[in-house]
Image (cartoon, rainbow, N blue to C red; front, side, top):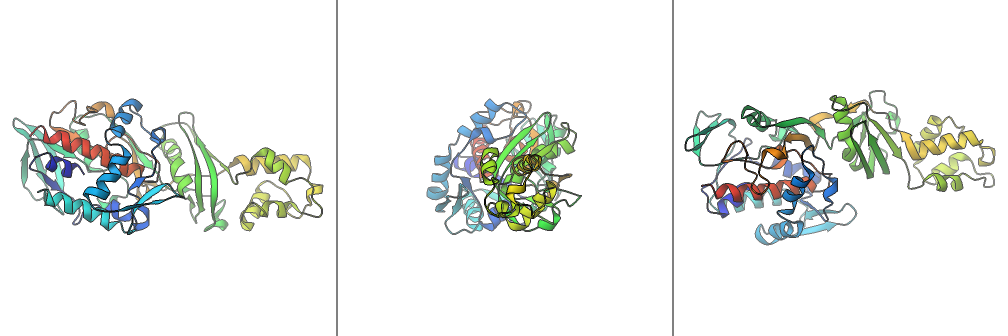
Amino acid sequence: MAAIFAASSGADTLLVEGTRDGGRKVLISGGGRCNVLPTVVDESRFVTDSSANSLRKLLRAWPLPEQRAFFEGVIGVPLVEEVVSGKLFPASHKARHIRDGLLDHARALGVATMMDTRVVAVAPNPQGWSVSLDTGVVVEAQAVILATGGRSVPNTGSDGMGLELVARLGLVVHPTYAALTPLLDAAGTFGELAGISLPVSLSARSDRFAAVSTGGFLFTHTGYSGPSVLDVSHVVSRAQLGHSGPASVRVQWTALRDAEWEVALRPHGARTVTGALRAELPDRLAAVLLRHAAVDPTRLLAELRRDEKVRLIETLVRGLLPCTGDDGYRKAEVTGGGVSLGEVHTRTLESRRHPGLFLCGELLDAFGPIGGYNFLWAWATGRTAGTAAASTT
């Protein structure tokens, strides 16, 4: 996106790509369908250790309706809305149509590409910038845009090299951590439930950070995944890295709150407590939660003691979800932390320390929830950086 807008603004543009084909995160997103944008944007759901005001300005530089119009009208890829998830996908449901459409458009604008080529250093010089490649070639440029991604899913090419480059240049880089990643439970507390999925509400807290999410939840052989888990995982990740005190995750297993469960657990003929839970939960999960609450599954509702009911409702509405860590960058959809937004001019994304150096995307200290938010951030900041970089040439 940065290359497209640099070229369309009149700059001679070279795109250096570390992989042989580029856009691999686009290809794997949305299960290979590419959730290219969200259907609506809630700015409050973005996470940053930098200025929230700077983040909002960067997001608003290219509003969602204009981004959608770009993909459909300029790139020529019709988008369709998935109402349940609140995501926009290419109508073909093929991620390659987004990736190929962007690359084809960039090349049509005159962008030169060097694929399967790594940048190993960038350095300012009196005329602009020197970009050293792993081939031994040094490219001279008036402006450089770093759009390298962070550390997440390193086999797609984002192995943290960009973060190393900016650190060498003296920019402030907030500590990075895996975000939107599955959570682990080494104890295997719910291991027998692997494969079961259901909608839940999660709340993760530490002494410094908090996050809540409602959505799909999946038991895995190693812990937990699903949209609700990914969206709160950064609280656990940061605690594991010592960025805060210990984190706890609590789960509301159904839409029912305390008062509704009080009603559901009232005596009703010969109905058992198991029968009451199975009306709202998968059978196997109901059995495990009764065990965790130390309630006899064969007990009739009429026989349920008050202390048992209190304990069971606490488990159902605010149950502690045991977790011992996260699945790291290997499966993280994004990298938290990164270059402080205070290091760049928000109107241009040009470095405040190094004129002619521009930064965009996941390299910057901001990320959003799953559902196209992080693509929206990439497209918006890429456009800003590309347009502004062209004005320096």
